[in-house]
Length: 328
Image (cartoon, rainbow, N blue to C red; front, side):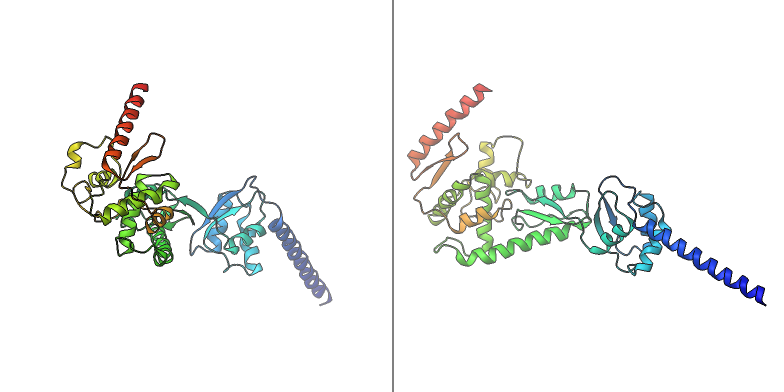
């Protein structure tokens, strides 16, 4: 019996030593620097467990032994803490580091910018071209409903969710700006303000001119004078918001609801998505007597409060156009 007891004791001691050595080596492996030599992004899908994650991490070269990673995560009590998303894994990250990163919820934030004056078609085309978003846009958002800005998003965000966020951002802005609008404006709704702001947005990219151009359009609306603005005609010809040819006289005579050379008042919808500055310009237009403006050849516009003066400005612009053609 004594010999058997000694054998059992030695066997137990040997097992304990082996287990301790195994756990020590595993612990050291779990905490030593990983094989990646540069920062890379790892995406953990929603609902994916630690077994699949460990296999993927080994396959993609983040770790060398998936079994140790699985054991380390389970023994650390983090098996249910791993979160979905795209994570930045730094160079040399250990298995412990990776476990903590995947449990942190600090996912990579991507950025995109919607440009002032883009149409719904242009926005959809841009978003559909980003390959880290989900579900293509098949139905265009209402024209003018999005606030152009820079937005953050995470990988695999649904595109329509992004659109809704941009629309809510515009509604929030209008809730702030509309109550502070100037008195006596010739429109009664935020929708009309956005329509006019979209026209201002397409007429000028010069910040200091926006309120002046808005003032001209406000004056024309008050006097029931047609707006006669080319961007609305272009939008009526193609909802993309641009055409690959100059506007023709026949276009100005065409019967479409966006031809402001024929209709009075505002077109039925916005013709683009205006930025904050253009919306503010429409709600706080420059007080002016001007009724006309035309390009002046410097990137800005020449303004006039009467037709004869405006025609002089148009002649100057025509001469500038001819000189530019000769130079080319």
